[in-house]
Length: 161
Image (tube, rainbow, N blue to C red):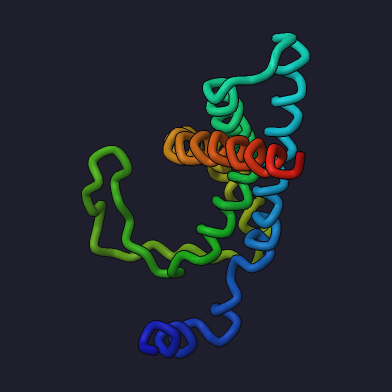
């Protein structure tokens, strides 16, 4: 309701679609995660020469999620930057205090312009700000998911026999 009308009034109808291109790229996150998981699982079985345990699945699942998170994080940063309000207050990053009551204008013409500006002003690191805490936040959930996934897969396979 109010949010949509405010965005349309202040930024135009196209503002509702900001970040669509990087959001579509983020659809690859799950594929990267599953491909990484299956590859790590296969390599681990070969290396260890035994069936994998729940602990192994837990560790492999966490690593697969971290790989997927790091791989797709630049698209997440670009999407977030594109979707931020163009008029935002300036904060001191270390203290969290408002630098000034003046607003700093942040304007991106699109995905490529955003990527260029991030690289120009922040370097390659700018695409990975917050990546480590994010990866550590999401890895345990994915690890548990893959333990459950393997348990259910084994259960279904045993029913088929």
